[in-house]
Image (cartoon, rainbow, N blue to C red; front, top):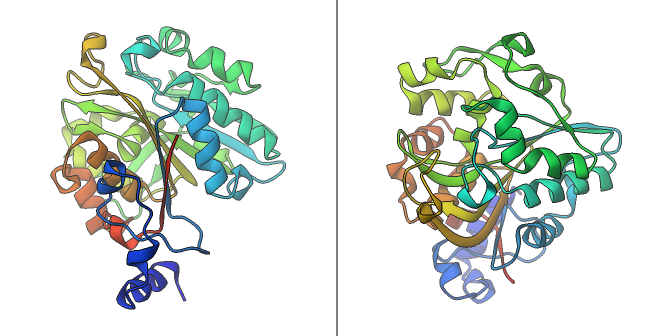
Length: 307
């Protein structure tokens, strides 16, 4: 029996009500989601700790990094590293979270761990001033540029409606494991940037997406190669003036983290953390219509942790 079918049947039997974890307002974000003991989690949501500690707890609940990374594999960890701003501005993924993810990949037996982005600002400054370059190198990972078209190879998007092909960074094509690590923040064009939106940094020509129904293109690319794991950094959240932000006044310290293999589900949950209805975010709604994942968080087995 499939996990989601089991959850629905369990709910029907009236068992889940007593099993639901209660952790105050944090639980309300996910609308009474049932917790079913004995089944693997579809999502883990953590609140209240420092980035690396929240990740330790979350990946442990998911069964450890070995659930996603096997010995000898080549791993790409894709953060948001697109802006020449300091970590306090929250325009990029938190560097301490990135360091911890790379360390867990090696502990699970990864042969190589690569990190790259196709930034909007000058790439060397983005890599350095985000703090991510140093954090990744300190953990033994390799930082790779994404600023030259020759790094990208043309691929077809079989399920794409607007985006039928794209030039994708060769690391994405060559890796065994893809871990997507967006930072949750406001975006002037799409209202929010989260897991699916973060993947625009895997391709060369983002301008095509902006000119040809941005929301549909984001959902189209989500159908191409799905990440093995999505980790949403909501430690510092940019509430306005995104995607780059203006100052630290744009930031709210939320101290939250989400993990899920389902990009649509993790985007829906992150939208709720931000205070938005997932259906108001065009690419989330479209992706669910394309059956790329679910926004129905009450159908998922979610582990919630407060530190």
